[in-house]
Amino acid sequence: MEAVKLKGNVVEINKGIKIVRITEEDVETISDHVSSKSEIPILVNYVKVNKVYAFGNVYEDGDVIDSNESLDHYIKHLIPYEDLPKLEKRAYKCFAGIPTLRNNIIQHEDVGSSINCLMDILKHPKYVLIFS
Image (cartoon, rainbow, N blue to C red):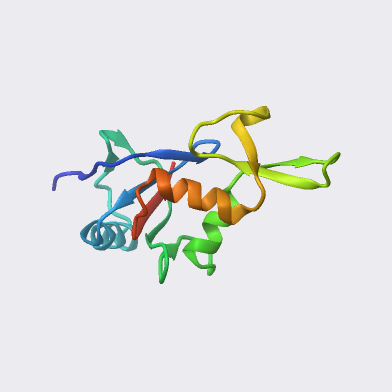
C-alpha cells in the first residue's frame, strides 16, 4: 500500500511539534492509520511523520493521542510563552513571524490571540494534524 501523503502549510508550534491543515478525508485515513498501528508512513510535504500527537476537527471532536482533553485545549498547552516579570504578565508566541522579544515571541496578551494568529497562518482550518 502507498504512503499517506498530505500537503499543506506546516507551522512549527513548539520545539519540533508541527501543525498542518488537513481535509475530512485525511482525518479518516489518519484515524485508520493510528488505530491499526499501520507501518505505512504518513508523509507531509514528502517528510515522514515520526509521531502523531493529535488530529481532527479543531472546533468539535478532534482526537488527542494518549489524552482525554479536547484538541483546542491541547493546542492551548502547546503555545509557547515567555514570562515578563517586570510587566507581571506573559507574552505568547506570534506565528506571523514578527520577532520582537526573545524566542520569536511578541506580546500577544493571551493564548487565544496567539491561537487566532496561528489559525490565520493556517487559513482557518476545520481539521488539523499535530505531529513531529
